[in-house]
Amino acid sequence: MAVVQRKFTEIIQTLKLAKKTSKDDYVTHMRLVLLGMGVVGGIAFVIKLIAEFITFGGRQ
View 1 (spheres, rainbow, N blue to C red):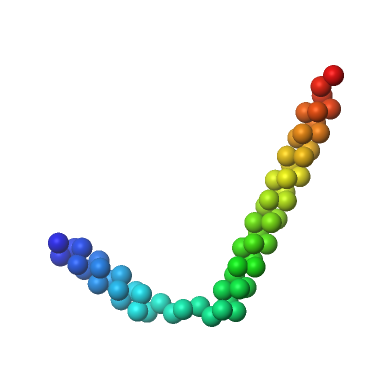
View 2 (cartoon, helix red, strand yellow):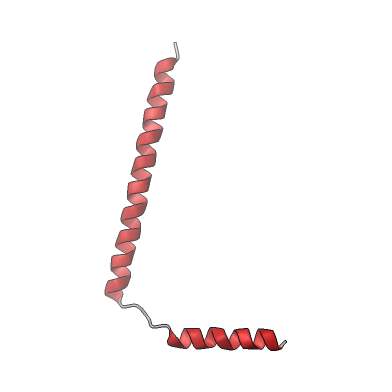
């Protein structure tokens, strides 16, 4: 029981030390995440498109 209470106290102390990010930092981070997702999705789409053309071209 003491271990759980100590862990709970550590969590509270960590949350007290954590600072809230500014809206500008949050928006910048969100743009980077969305850009990364778009790039990865675009690459996956191109690979899938090429694979479809190769597969379609092989059928008679």
